[in-house]
Amino acid sequence: MSTSAVPGIVGPFAGLDVPWLLRMRAETRGDHPFLIWAPFDGPSRSWSYREFDDRVGALAAGLAKRGVKQGDAVLIHLDNCIEMMLAWFACVELGAIAVTTNTRSAAAEMTYFADHCGAVAAITQPAYAELVAQNCKNLRWIAVTSHDAGNAPAQGRAPQQADSFEALFADNADRRQRPTDPFAPCSVQYTSGTTSRPKAVLWTHANALWGAKINAAHQDLHAGDVHQTYLPLFHTNALAYSMLSSLWVGGTCVIQPRFSARRFWNVAAEHRCTWTSTIPFCIKALLEHEIPKQHTFRLWGTAVCDPPPFAPFGVKMIGWWGMTETITHGIIGEVDQPNTPMSLGRAAAEYEIRIVDDNGAPTAVGDTGNLLIKGIPGLSLFKEYLHNEQATRESFDAHGYFITGDRITLLEHGFMKFGDRAKDMLKVGGENVAASEIEQIIITVPGVREAAVVAKKHPMLDEVPVVFIIPLTGVENIPKTLHDDVLSACRKALADFKVPREVHFVDDMPRSTLEKVAKNELRKLLA
Image 1 (tube, rainbow, N blue to C red):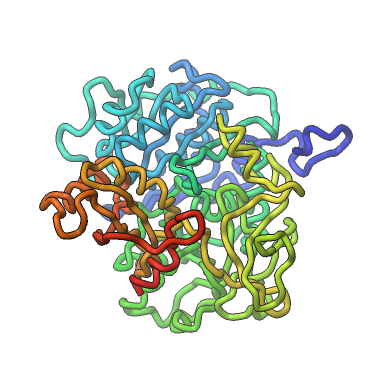
Image 2: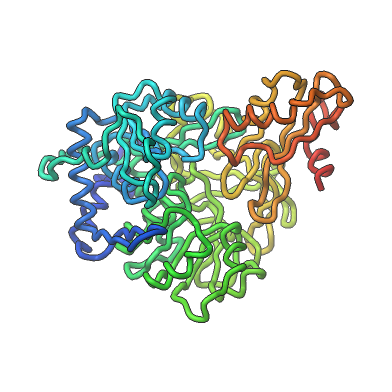
């Protein structure tokens, strides 16, 4: 139950919303740099709080003139760039729902996203313009930026019916004020669950403000901090952990198009970065480059606390665990105290955490159990899965705890370590992937009787998908094209990180009860 449903309870963001936060910072930190765009080619460009707020207002006024209304969904299909942030804040100011989608998505996924959320318009870039135009048929209009994450676009990329992003802007004086409602819809991110279709995680304005405030507190951010951001802004990590938290404290966020080990230290030195949110893939890549003897980083946030292999950086690293549904970290390392190395940290003070066995009984220290988390929907937990009441309902247990699908090992002194994942989930380079989504594509390929996708450990990406297939004809008589047909079908229907890295043909698979495939045995075969 949200706080708005309980009479007399005053929530932490009563009378506030995201536009208030940006407007307040434009008034109190007007000349301070908020966002710095650091493209791979060309000089950096800085936007002060006041300048950015003015541009957001002009874009919001332009979107309103284009017919975007409160409650409308707008698809934002962009790589990291300032235009993405302008679009997100402008939609949110209007009361429209900013729907950020993964730019590695395939055509079928784009059709699903646009149709499912009922998007009225899309803002994208030249590289993806044709993909959006061809597969999102019910849009009223498409606007395209002038560049591809800082790079000059290839010729003929934008469809003729598309408008330029710059043409969307109107007079900032025409920006409209709407009634403030912290529990109004704010944004949507699509996230893979254990079902075949990605679910649309709906945040309220209170959710976004919660992410801004609590992330800043967990990460010990202050007005003088400079956050280096290269993880994708269409995900919670960069959007909330990095950008919104910087906004909350009045700090600075340096945005790069994507991660580049070769460019990392130069950008960090140029802008005197003090903080970054990262993943093991990036840190491993940085180990292959010379580490400056002096740098200005004081903290990094990543998958685990103080991993010994990364000690050469000389930076304290706090671990954390969170999901799109939790907005911020449900488990977090201590900034000012020693942490158990390789742990995630301890339960965040803002949530209730349970680790239980399959019967619901608490697990003992040293044991691994299912991770459950309790918060307030619409505030400290997502409001709902958009247009999917059943999925929302089934995601909570009888006691109101959100069922994360992750498994955690309880350590001494309340620290926790990641145990394993629910059997049908993979983590590919920081991306959540549902095995069942891949399997449902493969099973439609002629010549395939049964398919089972499991994770294989990968030195850089953590895990990659691998598929075991029972062919209709048996292993001895496999059609010559079946291997390529399977991969071709996956490439057409799925984002590239979901495409299996290996295809194994087998006559049968290990089984557990009720003839279910014993995926743990398949993983052992890979090992």
